[in-house]
Length: 136
Ligand SMILES: [Zn+2]
Image (cartoon, rainbow, N blue to C red; front, top):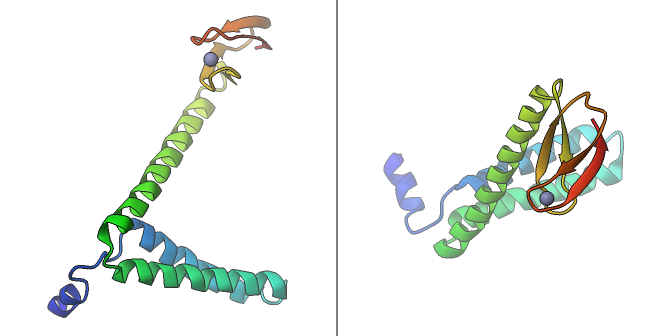
């Protein structure tokens, strides 16, 4: 069985992270469309088409022999995922510190600036040279 499975995917991409996401998201979309069909026929039909498309795309990618292309797609997805994970971790950290600090996003460079709470209105100088005037 294992041998047969290995031979099936020889020289092919197989289920990488992106295909797994497409497969499960597609399946979830199909299931959800079944539940939504009473609520909104249009939305349910759209969701089932998208779900089907995602599942088919997952299989197409799994059986593809164009490994460099599929690897590149997967890498884009993994980088995006990593970015989301970092952003979420940073957001949780800011929430944890939110009792003692306020956070401002620098309009100049987008960096997150941390200032202690309860100091009234202060000038906050960013590393990039931008100065904000905010209430703490
Ligand atoms: Zn800045």
